[in-house]
Image 1: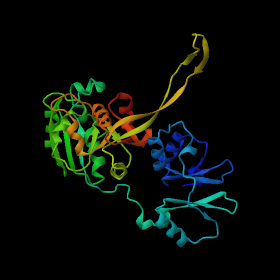
Image 2 (image 1 turned 90 degrees about the vertical axis):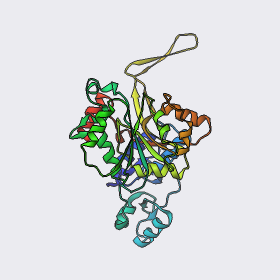
Image 3 (image 1 turned 90 degrees about the horizontal axis):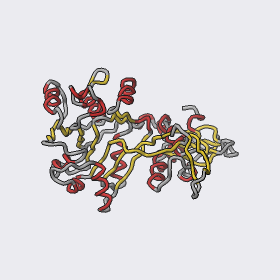
Length: 351
């Protein structure tokens, strides 16, 4: 990538860094001052650690970036020495500076170790649960006839788009929770020739977004993935799973930054009720839950039997009982909520 595309000023906001990282093939940005002098580096891992500490998306990156980066000075190093530096420290990117500390270029792992270039779809083994029992109220009138998981996006149903994403990572063990129009979903798969294991979890009555997971108690022994059937996530599934395991979380939820602008002037009042200020069209950044989770099997025991129980209920209960809950943050460009018409039309263009 051009050097200018991976440079970021130290007074930039976290949300800008996230968006830049989303398009950067380097997985890392170089932090500089206004004169392009090297100050540090920042990766998505740095940002996630900052978010866990309570750093907001509108905060400046100077509270999260690495201030002690490895770097090399132009004309005073060899490629072999850079390779050794990268290998021993497991570094993805090393800036190159001149004698005055101005950034002039950079090395990346993929440039120097082409044969070890990361496979975008690192294979791993885990069970996947797709929550497909809902009525799809937001997609009526289509869902009055078809169950939401079978609504087509271009040439195939939503459900197959979701499954195909997991197949890229070698995941072949799927559990689908069904209730509304379950016979249509089952009939669809009976007509399909697929090379993966499919298990149905039948809900005799609607059990919410987590209630039916109780049926997996004692049947899964490793951390497993749960996803809603109306979201398609473009992030790296392997990295999310690795993040969950490396940090020894009991539950990991994937969140995305979302910017919301109030389209009006907001009145701010003094204590006596008089006008203090009018804040014109204020903008706020939020982290929202996208509907993709990693769960340890131990948390299944928290789910009551045959009771409407939502994933938010499970997370709140787990948090109350001091289970460790992690948050993996992705860009708002990394996922699509197909469960509403506006995003459904967006999905038609990108899937």
